[in-house]
Length: 341
Ligand code: SF4
Ligand code: SF4
Image (tube, rainbow, N blue to C red; front, side, top):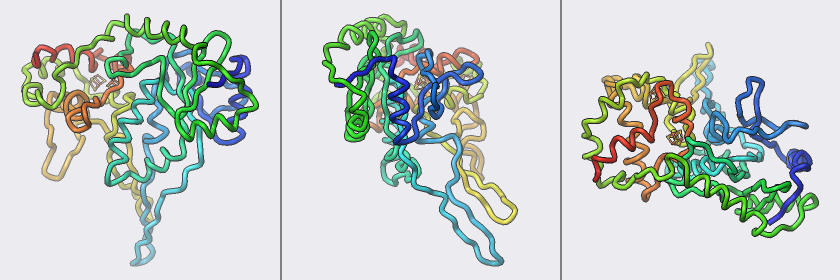
């Protein structure tokens, strides 16, 4: 483990930026926490987490896939893929770091999504342990330790020091290139800070959310629950919950007519939208009840059933904070609890 005084964090950022693009969570002009490319003097946000998650780095909201150009009667096919430059994302929280594991299970299985893979290979994730988890957090439900985040390297702010520990080869490479700034440290120096974080996390209102029975074995019971109409009644179908969610991974592919050809791009989509997966014969889910049920069944039942028990939620709390009707995955799980006991 290594450390440097927190007062020297700008020097650390500058040293990373000298090697590759660095993104940090900071407050934008409207006061919202978001990841931006670091520039001299840019400071870390005091917010616990960014409004939009870190998934944008690997799965951006829109991206070009391929281009077709008409030349007389010929069609030229242009591959839009370019090799990604190396980049570092600093300050990713434990929940968002786990979301990458979930996205990997979707995009890196056969057939591999080469657009996603390219970014994953070039991105180094530096996590930052939480010190003050918020009331909306319930990452511990999913076995995530906010005091000991995953990532290529992990950081802790304890007292006047920033502690850093490499966890992967990429993390080792990054820290060894910063060695002249870092001093040796002992893991015991962060123990009190970690204990304080875990004590807070354990006392949060949703820390002990009960998900027993939310897996494949009760799929039909949960699917047929009579609670869905009531739960979904007020849902506006706005899709906010899916757009802020670090684990939602649905997208649409569309063609843009450039006048002399076509640009094919993909963009995030939402299972909450009425035209989601709309096909020539019609829609597979015609009511908001069905669409609402799909979102929560996917995260709480289908995904773990197909991925060795891994839920499609990391307890980041964004949907709890942002849904305009105050509906969220915690309310759904609590309402359905009785169906599986
Ligand atoms: S659950 Fe909330 S955020 Fe999600 S689509 Fe419905 S109203 Fe919008
Ligand atoms: S469902 Fe809600 S709490 Fe779970 S990962 Fe998505 S936004 Fe976060």
